[in-house]
Image (tube, one colour):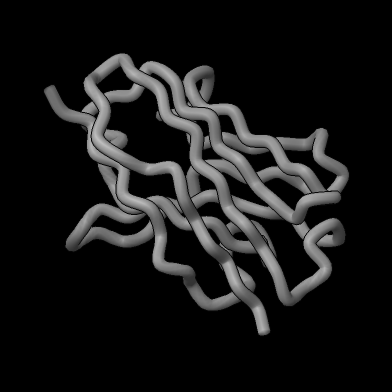
Length: 119
């Protein structure tokens, strides 16, 4: 049974930092590209960052490029997102998933972790 458990969200002031974690189980984590998505209430979920299985090839949405850093630990089956210089527009619920195709999520969604950037 696939499980994706996101954690690390919270309330932070603009310019602050957070580190999100995703604990994965139920599939061969090291074989799959993994991604972070985010969703604002009432809007579609968007792909913001992807890391390929080998851990070197990464993709970032332009709006987070240079501020967010994606990494993975295949031995622990964990995915991370270091978020620096956070902006109010980064406020969203963040989800991880395995990637299929260019942008689609392979599995069902976890509960996500809420990030709120506000004074």
